[in-house]
Amino acid sequence: MNKIIAIAGPTASGKTALSIALAKKYNGEIISADSMQFYREMNIGTAKPDMTERDGIPHRMIDILDITESFSVSDFCERCEREVQEVISLGKLPIMCGGTGFYVDSFLDGVKFGQFDNDPVLRDRLYAELEQVGIDAMYERLCTVDPENTVDRHNPKRVIRALEVYELTGKTLGEWNAESKTEPPKYDSLIIGLRFLDREKLYERINKRVDIMLESGLLQEVEKLISMGIKDTVTAGQAIGYKELYPYFDGTATLEECTEKLKQETRKYAKRQMTWFRRNPKIQWIDLDDMTSEEILQKGCGLADSFLNIR
Image 1 (cartoon, one colour):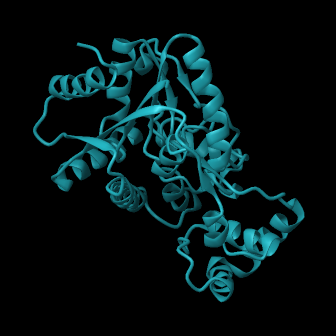
Image 2 (image 1 turned 45 degrees about the horizontal axis):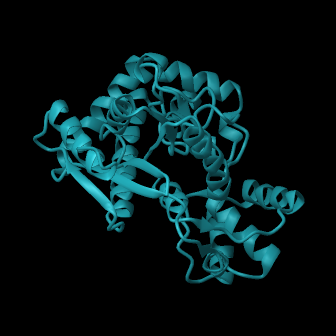
């Protein structure tokens, strides 16, 4: 069975640096599992590694979508399978890297999602209704047909998707997902998780990262994307790092207020990521709190050596 390594963990934990180091050591190529790094032009706000950071290591699944395009977990699994097979055909080691845990788990666990034909007319109608009545009203509608739903009421894409599934299939999103099946995994996988036991240390890294993003031109990037229509898009427009700055350009909030909101939302996102990853008993954790970069790499290489049977 072919082997694959995945580097997982919350935002700002150092996944990119470790994945590149491992790719250099083990002749690997990196496959992004960050749902926002798929989008072109969204560079600074997604912490997308630039060519200097990549250090000659090929990165796949980056810059594959326009900001107007949507991309589901089933789309990811299908595209990722092709990329992984191509890496293997080159005699290299696939290394997944990203914090979108649902995508990582779905691919590695071999989940096959139920299929049904999308109806663009229905979707357009639902989004038109969303614009007219607002997210709260659409969420209340969802609750009438699916009182036990676990959809984030503040995520328009998820609310509309759940309503779309119900209107097309007569089943709730939970029922539809339950019909998805898991096949035996195609790959022997090692998941290396990066975490801070002291959450405040991670939060300090997040706050510093936001400051660096702003110094690196995040405002200019957001302004450009607004001119390209990102605020009207369903997926890209809701990305953390972008939507928090819209009020600044609308003149309804100061830069300081938006910056603090961005830091706050990123910290909340990191907390949600860790909640997801903690449920996975397969992850082998590296606790970063008091480790140097060299020690982190040494630990990661130790796990990889054992997994790859390198002595």
